[in-house]
Length: 439
Image (cartoon, rainbow, N blue to C red; front, side):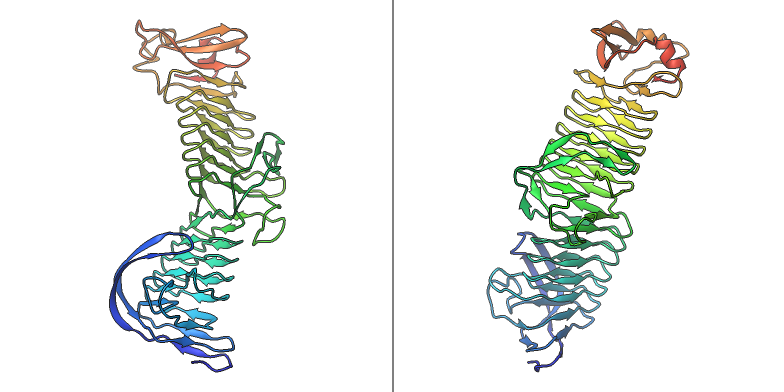
C-alpha cells in the first residue's frame, strides 16, 4: 500500500507456465499465450499521489485483477497506479476491462516483445524496444511503437498511432459513421489542383486517429467494413491538431474488403510515394504528389494517381483509372476498364485480354506520346518474321478506333481489345515507328 505521496512499488511474482487465449473485451481480438511468466496476485495500491509500479527484467504477466484469464472476474489488484514500467523481458500488461474503469495511465514496455492493453482512460503507452502489440482501448490514447516492428490498434477515441523505427502496422479503427451531407472531393495535390470527382461518404466508417509511421516501411491496415480514410480532414477529431495532415510517413495503405475511400488529395499537404491496395469492394483510391502504386483489387474501382509517375492497376472489375500528371503506367485488368492517362507520356499495359474491350480516352500519338504495350497478349509474334497485321487491326467505328487482336495470328476471329475514344489517325506502322505501340 502506498502513501499519500509519490510512491514506487515493485512487482514480484512466482514463475508459472501460462497457457490461455486472452481476449481483449474492447476489440474482441484474441491472443494465444503459451509461455513462462512471473505472476503475482498481490494487491498493488499506490494510494494518493503519482505512483509507479516497476516490473523486473523477467518476463511478467500483469493484469488488473487476480484472474489472469479475464479482468471481468476476480479481485482488482492494481489500484491507483499511474505509471507502469515494464522490464526487459517479454511482458503481458492487461488493463482491459468492461467492468473496471481505470483512469489515465502511462505505460513503458521496455525492450522485450510485449503485449499491452490499455483501459478506458486517455492512456499513453511507449512500447520501447521489441516487436510489440499495443491496444489502446477506449479513450484518446497516445501509442508509440518506437523500436522494431510493432502492431498498434487505437480503439475508440481520437488516438495517435506512432510506429517509430521499424516496419510497423497501424490499424484503422471505426470511431463513428459519416453522416449525410459529406463528400470526398478529389482536389489533387498542391502541385496539381484537380477539383474533380466528388464521392458521397455516408454511410462509411469514420476515423478520428492520427497515423505516424516514423522510419521504416510502415502500413495502415483498414478493416473489412466500408471505411473512409483522409489525409486532409478538418471535420473530424485529429490528435495532431486542427487543420493538420492526419497521415505521416506511412508507405503502404491496405483498405481491406468493403467499399472504401482512401483520399490522399489535399490543396495544402504534399504526400510522397505511397502504395495503396483496395483489396475487395468498389473502392475509391486517390493518391497525392508522389510516385504512387495504386492497385484496385476486385470490384469496380476508381483510381487516381494525381501528380507523379504513378502505377495504376485495375485488377478484376470494371475500373476507372486516371494517371493525371507525370509519366504514368496504367495496367488493364479483367473487366471493362476506362483509362485516362492525363499529362505526360503514359504507358497502357495489357497483360490479359478478356471478353470486354477496354477504353483509352486520351491516347496521344507521335514521338514522345503515349504507349500501348500489348506484347504480353500476342502469342508467338516475331517482328522479324511476322506481319503485325496478321495479329492486330485498327478499325474505325462511330468516331472511335478499335484495336482488334488475333492473339496467335492464325485464322481465328479478331477480338476488340482496346477502343481509342475519339479515334486516332495513325496506321499500325506509324504507331510502331513512333513508339506508340509495343507488340
